[in-house]
Every structure is written in structure tokens, then in C-alpha cells.
Amino acid sequence: EPSGELQGVVGIHVDDLLICGQGPVFDKAMKTLESRLNFGTRKYGNFTYCGLQIEQDKRTKQIRLHQNTYIENLQPMSVKGLADGKPIPKGEPFTAYRGLLGGLSWSAINTRPDIAFDVSWLASRGEAATGADAKFANKVLRKIKHDYVSFVFYKISQHISQWRLVTYHDAGWATRPS
Image: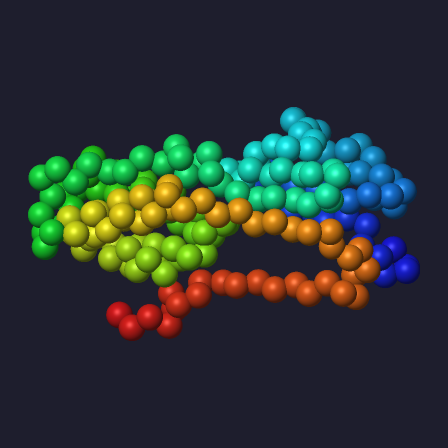
């Protein structure tokens, strides 16, 4: 928009789009987009997008993001028979460990930056991960299941000159000593 006012925002993850906006410029852009792309499902208001629960309060104009349902569905791995100082055996135990790390990583990336260091450290253990690492991964999972976190976005100024774009990438991974 020539006035500098933000008309809409598009977020993309693989083949899923999250689009928000308002006004005639936004409506026209949406009609053009919908005429060119064959969308499968459309959801409005409160919905889940890539494991993120998005809730919109029209009265207060707030948007709340959280992953409470996604996190509740994550399961701890069995540590029965795993020795603290010995590598996790290949096969099912190691697959369960990698699965748990994937779930924790998705949570850290989206709504739980408080566990990002722990998850990065666990992931860096790779095939050398031990029973102690598996127990620690379960401990991190218990923490996020116990302490729910939500992000609340209050009414945001629409004037784009007041917006600041910030991105974080691979914090600490490349700079960690081997």
C-alpha cells in the first residue's frame, strides 16, 4: 500500500500458508491468490496450524499462540534397561529417542525457546547419546508438559514503519566446540 500501512502478512511452511490481513487491498490480493492456487482447507478464527494453536479474540483484538495440545501428545521414551553411561542401542530405543528429540525441537522452534539449549545439546550428542541423555530428554518433556507457555500478541500498529523484523538461526549450533 503506498501509504505504508501493512495490509497483510503471509507465513509459509512447506505447502501450508498462514495469511492474515484486512481491507480492500488485502481482499483483492486474496482473490488473486485463490484464483491461482487450489487451496484444500480453509480455516478461520481459532485453529491449529503446523502444531500451533492459534486463537483470535475479536473483542480484545489479541492473538494467542501455543502448542499445548501438541505437547500433551508427545510421549516420553522408555528408559527401561538403558544404562546412564552406555550408548542408546540402535533400533527401536534409538528411533524413540530421535522421535522425542524431533518433538522437543519443534516445540523449541515455535513456542518454547526456554528449552532450545537443552534440545540443541541433546541433538548434538547424535549416535553417542546415552541412557542419561534419554532420561534428560524425558525430563525436558516433563518440564514443558508442566509449564504451559502462550504468546499473546496485542493489537499491533498497522503502520509498517513501526514494525521490526527479527530472525534467529541456528543459535549456538555452529559456534559450539566439537
